[in-house]
Picture 1 (spheres, rainbow, N blue to C red):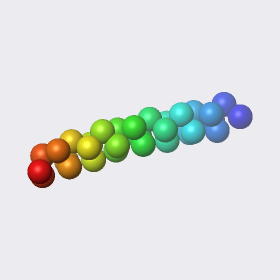
Picture 2 (picture 1 turned 135 degrees about the horizontal axis):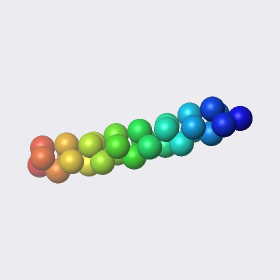
Picture 3 (picture 1 turned 120 degrees about the horizontal axis):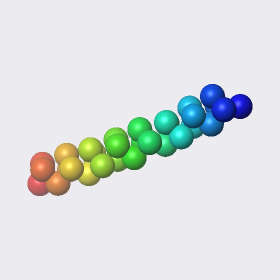
Length: 30
């Protein structure tokens, strides 16, 4: 149960990083 929670929180954390990275990439390529 705890491992499942850690996995989900870790996944959402990575999604946030990817989103920020993608936004920066789009801004740079303008």
